[in-house]
Image 1 (cartoon, rainbow, N blue to C red):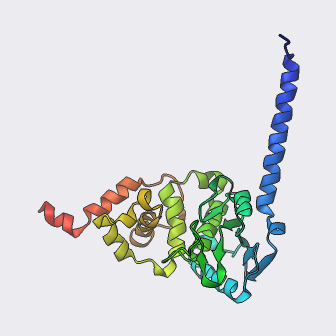
Image 2: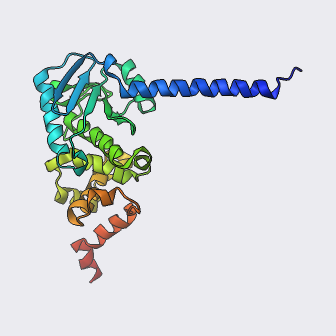
Length: 256
Protein backbone atom coordinates (compact mmCIF):
# COMPACT_ATOMS: atom_id res chain seq x y z
CA UNK A 1 0.00 0.00 0.00
CA UNK A 2 1.42 3.34 -1.01
CA UNK A 3 1.87 6.02 1.55
CA UNK A 4 1.57 9.76 0.98
CA UNK A 5 4.37 11.67 2.69
CA UNK A 6 3.38 13.88 5.61
CA UNK A 7 4.46 16.97 3.68
CA UNK A 8 1.99 16.17 0.87
CA UNK A 9 -0.84 15.64 3.39
CA UNK A 10 -0.01 18.98 4.93
CA UNK A 11 -0.09 20.70 1.55
CA UNK A 12 -3.42 19.09 0.71
CA UNK A 13 -4.92 20.19 4.03
CA UNK A 14 -3.66 23.71 3.49
CA UNK A 15 -5.20 23.79 0.02
CA UNK A 16 -8.56 22.57 1.37
CA UNK A 17 -8.42 25.07 4.22
CA UNK A 18 -7.51 27.86 1.81
CA UNK A 19 -10.34 26.95 -0.57
CA UNK A 20 -12.81 26.80 2.34
CA UNK A 21 -11.74 30.23 3.61
CA UNK A 22 -12.03 31.64 0.09
CA UNK A 23 -15.60 30.30 -0.23
CA UNK A 24 -16.58 31.64 3.21
CA UNK A 25 -15.04 35.01 2.36
CA UNK A 26 -16.90 35.17 -0.96
CA UNK A 27 -20.17 34.30 0.78
CA UNK A 28 -19.60 36.96 3.45
CA UNK A 29 -19.02 39.53 0.70
CA UNK A 30 -22.26 38.40 -0.97
CA UNK A 31 -24.19 38.94 2.27
CA UNK A 32 -22.69 42.40 2.67
CA UNK A 33 -23.27 43.40 -0.96
CA UNK A 34 -26.42 41.57 -2.16
CA UNK A 35 -27.77 44.39 -4.37
CA UNK A 36 -27.00 42.76 -7.76
CA UNK A 37 -29.53 40.03 -6.90
CA UNK A 38 -32.33 42.52 -6.17
CA UNK A 39 -33.31 44.73 -9.09
CA UNK A 40 -36.00 46.78 -7.32
CA UNK A 41 -35.47 49.11 -4.39
CA UNK A 42 -37.16 51.94 -2.47
CA UNK A 43 -35.57 54.21 0.12
CA UNK A 44 -37.09 56.09 3.07
CA UNK A 45 -34.44 58.09 4.90
CA UNK A 46 -31.68 55.75 6.07
CA UNK A 47 -33.74 52.59 5.49
CA UNK A 48 -34.15 50.80 2.19
CA UNK A 49 -36.31 47.96 0.94
CA UNK A 50 -35.09 45.76 -1.91
CA UNK A 51 -36.90 43.03 -3.80
CA UNK A 52 -36.35 40.54 -6.59
CA UNK A 53 -39.82 41.50 -7.88
CA UNK A 54 -41.31 44.91 -8.74
CA UNK A 55 -42.68 46.74 -5.69
CA UNK A 56 -44.96 49.75 -5.40
CA UNK A 57 -42.95 52.69 -4.13
CA UNK A 58 -45.75 54.08 -1.97
CA UNK A 59 -46.36 50.71 -0.27
CA UNK A 60 -42.65 50.14 0.33
CA UNK A 61 -42.20 53.60 1.80
CA UNK A 62 -45.14 52.97 4.12
CA UNK A 63 -43.55 49.76 5.44
CA UNK A 64 -40.20 51.50 5.97
CA UNK A 65 -41.79 54.50 7.69
CA UNK A 66 -43.65 52.21 10.11
CA UNK A 67 -40.39 50.41 10.90
CA UNK A 68 -38.46 53.62 11.24
CA UNK A 69 -40.95 55.00 13.78
CA UNK A 70 -40.50 51.90 15.93
CA UNK A 71 -36.71 51.82 15.60
CA UNK A 72 -36.52 55.48 16.59
CA UNK A 73 -37.72 54.51 20.07
CA UNK A 74 -34.61 52.38 20.60
CA UNK A 75 -31.37 54.00 21.81
CA UNK A 76 -29.52 51.61 19.47
CA UNK A 77 -30.90 53.58 16.53
CA UNK A 78 -28.86 56.63 17.50
CA UNK A 79 -27.22 58.12 14.43
CA UNK A 80 -29.73 56.49 12.10
CA UNK A 81 -27.35 53.98 10.48
CA UNK A 82 -27.98 52.70 6.97
CA UNK A 83 -29.90 49.41 7.02
CA UNK A 84 -31.18 47.50 4.01
CA UNK A 85 -33.98 44.91 3.92
CA UNK A 86 -33.92 42.38 1.06
CA UNK A 87 -37.03 40.38 0.15
CA UNK A 88 -36.30 36.95 -1.35
CA UNK A 89 -39.48 36.00 -3.21
CA UNK A 90 -37.84 33.29 -5.30
CA UNK A 91 -37.08 30.14 -3.33
CA UNK A 92 -33.59 29.68 -4.81
CA UNK A 93 -32.71 33.20 -3.73
CA UNK A 94 -34.10 32.54 -0.27
CA UNK A 95 -31.97 29.38 0.00
CA UNK A 96 -28.92 31.34 -1.09
CA UNK A 97 -29.25 34.16 1.43
CA UNK A 98 -30.91 32.30 4.33
CA UNK A 99 -28.50 29.36 4.19
CA UNK A 100 -29.13 27.04 7.17
CA UNK A 101 -32.03 29.25 8.31
CA UNK A 102 -34.03 28.59 5.15
CA UNK A 103 -37.74 28.51 6.02
CA UNK A 104 -37.80 31.18 8.72
CA UNK A 105 -39.43 34.57 8.13
CA UNK A 106 -36.27 36.64 8.29
CA UNK A 107 -32.58 36.55 9.08
CA UNK A 108 -29.94 39.08 10.11
CA UNK A 109 -26.22 38.29 10.07
CA UNK A 110 -24.15 39.73 12.95
CA UNK A 111 -21.47 41.21 10.67
CA UNK A 112 -23.76 43.01 8.20
CA UNK A 113 -26.32 45.80 8.25
CA UNK A 114 -28.34 43.88 5.68
CA UNK A 115 -31.36 41.78 6.61
CA UNK A 116 -33.18 39.21 4.50
CA UNK A 117 -36.89 38.38 4.43
CA UNK A 118 -38.83 35.58 2.82
CA UNK A 119 -41.55 36.09 0.20
CA UNK A 120 -43.69 39.13 1.03
CA UNK A 121 -46.76 41.02 -0.16
CA UNK A 122 -45.44 44.56 0.28
CA UNK A 123 -48.67 46.27 -0.75
CA UNK A 124 -50.57 44.37 1.98
CA UNK A 125 -47.71 44.78 4.49
CA UNK A 126 -47.58 41.01 4.99
CA UNK A 127 -45.05 38.20 4.99
CA UNK A 128 -46.16 35.15 3.01
CA UNK A 129 -46.00 31.90 4.96
CA UNK A 130 -44.54 28.64 3.69
CA UNK A 131 -48.12 27.54 2.91
CA UNK A 132 -48.53 30.54 0.61
CA UNK A 133 -50.87 32.56 2.84
CA UNK A 134 -50.34 35.94 4.46
CA UNK A 135 -49.09 35.69 8.05
CA UNK A 136 -52.00 37.13 10.07
CA UNK A 137 -52.27 39.29 13.16
CA UNK A 138 -49.75 41.65 14.63
CA UNK A 139 -46.80 40.12 12.74
CA UNK A 140 -46.96 42.42 9.75
CA UNK A 141 -44.17 42.89 7.23
CA UNK A 142 -43.00 46.03 9.04
CA UNK A 143 -42.97 43.97 12.27
CA UNK A 144 -40.53 41.47 10.72
CA UNK A 145 -38.47 44.26 9.13
CA UNK A 146 -38.15 45.98 12.49
CA UNK A 147 -37.36 42.75 14.33
CA UNK A 148 -34.49 41.85 12.01
CA UNK A 149 -33.20 45.43 11.83
CA UNK A 150 -33.11 45.47 15.64
CA UNK A 151 -30.88 42.39 15.50
CA UNK A 152 -28.57 44.29 13.14
CA UNK A 153 -28.53 47.30 15.47
CA UNK A 154 -27.86 45.10 18.51
CA UNK A 155 -24.91 43.45 16.79
CA UNK A 156 -23.60 46.87 15.79
CA UNK A 157 -23.85 48.05 19.41
CA UNK A 158 -22.34 45.09 21.27
CA UNK A 159 -20.30 43.37 18.55
CA UNK A 160 -20.96 40.09 16.69
CA UNK A 161 -19.44 37.82 19.33
CA UNK A 162 -21.36 39.36 22.24
CA UNK A 163 -24.50 39.36 20.11
CA UNK A 164 -24.28 35.61 19.60
CA UNK A 165 -23.69 35.17 23.33
CA UNK A 166 -26.88 36.94 24.41
CA UNK A 167 -29.50 34.70 26.05
CA UNK A 168 -32.32 33.91 23.64
CA UNK A 169 -34.93 35.69 25.73
CA UNK A 170 -32.91 38.92 25.55
CA UNK A 171 -31.78 38.62 21.92
CA UNK A 172 -35.19 37.71 20.51
CA UNK A 173 -37.23 39.42 23.20
CA UNK A 174 -35.67 42.83 22.62
CA UNK A 175 -36.08 42.51 18.83
CA UNK A 176 -39.77 41.66 19.28
CA UNK A 177 -40.20 44.37 21.92
CA UNK A 178 -38.99 47.01 19.44
CA UNK A 179 -41.01 45.43 16.61
CA UNK A 180 -44.23 45.60 18.63
CA UNK A 181 -43.71 49.32 19.20
CA UNK A 182 -46.54 51.16 20.98
CA UNK A 183 -48.84 48.26 20.14
CA UNK A 184 -47.37 46.09 22.91
CA UNK A 185 -49.87 45.71 25.76
CA UNK A 186 -48.00 44.83 28.95
CA UNK A 187 -51.16 44.14 30.96
CA UNK A 188 -52.46 41.66 28.38
CA UNK A 189 -49.09 39.96 28.13
CA UNK A 190 -48.78 39.72 31.92
CA UNK A 191 -52.24 38.21 32.19
CA UNK A 192 -51.44 35.68 29.46
CA UNK A 193 -48.15 34.80 31.17
CA UNK A 194 -49.76 34.25 34.58
CA UNK A 195 -52.60 32.24 33.03
CA UNK A 196 -50.17 30.05 31.13
CA UNK A 197 -51.71 30.97 27.77
CA UNK A 198 -50.51 28.76 24.86
CA UNK A 199 -49.33 31.86 22.99
CA UNK A 200 -46.74 32.38 25.70
CA UNK A 201 -45.08 29.02 25.09
CA UNK A 202 -42.26 29.48 22.57
CA UNK A 203 -41.78 25.72 22.24
CA UNK A 204 -45.37 25.31 21.03
CA UNK A 205 -45.77 28.39 18.87
CA UNK A 206 -42.27 29.52 17.89
CA UNK A 207 -43.35 33.05 18.86
CA UNK A 208 -41.35 35.38 21.09
CA UNK A 209 -44.27 36.98 22.96
CA UNK A 210 -43.04 35.60 26.31
CA UNK A 211 -39.55 36.97 25.71
CA UNK A 212 -40.88 40.40 24.66
CA UNK A 213 -42.96 40.48 27.84
CA UNK A 214 -39.91 39.75 30.01
CA UNK A 215 -37.91 42.48 28.23
CA UNK A 216 -40.79 44.92 28.69
CA UNK A 217 -40.84 44.02 32.37
CA UNK A 218 -37.13 44.78 32.75
CA UNK A 219 -37.14 48.00 30.70
CA UNK A 220 -40.51 49.55 31.48
CA UNK A 221 -41.25 48.27 34.98
CA UNK A 222 -37.84 47.72 36.55
CA UNK A 223 -36.49 50.69 34.56
CA UNK A 224 -33.35 49.03 33.30
CA UNK A 225 -31.54 50.67 30.42
CA UNK A 226 -31.06 48.78 27.17
CA UNK A 227 -27.31 48.98 27.74
CA UNK A 228 -27.66 47.24 31.09
CA UNK A 229 -29.94 44.58 29.59
CA UNK A 230 -27.33 43.77 26.94
CA UNK A 231 -24.40 43.62 29.39
CA UNK A 232 -23.26 40.73 31.56
CA UNK A 233 -24.21 39.44 34.04
CA UNK A 234 -27.54 38.67 32.38
CA UNK A 235 -30.51 38.05 34.66
CA UNK A 236 -31.78 34.47 34.55
CA UNK A 237 -35.07 34.04 32.75
CA UNK A 238 -36.37 31.67 35.44
CA UNK A 239 -35.59 34.19 38.19
CA UNK A 240 -37.47 36.99 36.44
CA UNK A 241 -40.47 34.76 35.83
CA UNK A 242 -40.47 33.64 39.45
CA UNK A 243 -40.34 37.26 40.60
CA UNK A 244 -43.28 38.21 38.39
CA UNK A 245 -45.33 35.30 39.69
CA UNK A 246 -44.49 36.09 43.32
CA UNK A 247 -45.73 39.66 42.83
CA UNK A 248 -49.05 38.48 41.43
CA UNK A 249 -51.85 39.61 43.81
CA UNK A 250 -53.57 36.24 43.41
CA UNK A 251 -50.48 34.42 44.69
CA UNK A 252 -50.12 36.90 47.55
CA UNK A 253 -53.72 36.19 48.56
CA UNK A 254 -53.11 32.43 48.57
CA UNK A 255 -50.13 32.83 50.91
CA UNK A 256 -52.22 34.59 53.54
